[in-house]
Amino acid sequence: MSNPQLDHLYQVFELYDDWSDRYRHLLELAKDLAPIGDDERIEENRVTGCLSQVWLIAEPASAGEGGDVMVFRADSDARLVQGLIAVILMLYSGRSASYVLQTDAREVFARLGLDNHLSVGRRNGVESMIQRIKALAQIRLEA
Image (tube, rainbow, N blue to C red; front, side, top):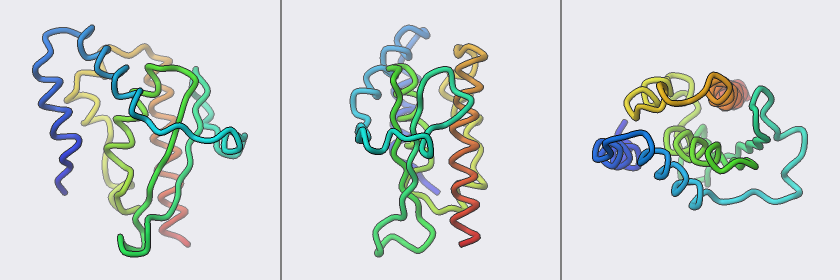
């Protein structure tokens, strides 16, 4: 399944010669992330296993988009993590629950060169976010 947002991000990242440019671009992506409300920053929405505070919300898509399409919203108290969230949402939000379960984000992070430049703690946090998204997708399929 084609993903124009990710395709564009791949093209942009290929233009950058070094990690600092990619890092700055992640910070720019963070600026476009829609914040979640204070009332949504509750324990139920918090992703455990992240160094930073991360909140993730899954919602069903509008009726016309299909029965198992999921929309994810997320936010963090750390700007870099917000940029990483933006990449994860490009991959999974607006996609079917079955797509979410079948799609490996590690390939995306490797292609972007992010896997080599994130600390172990950040990589663990990304993995925690992805596992939470996949768990929510599994629940959606079982409903």
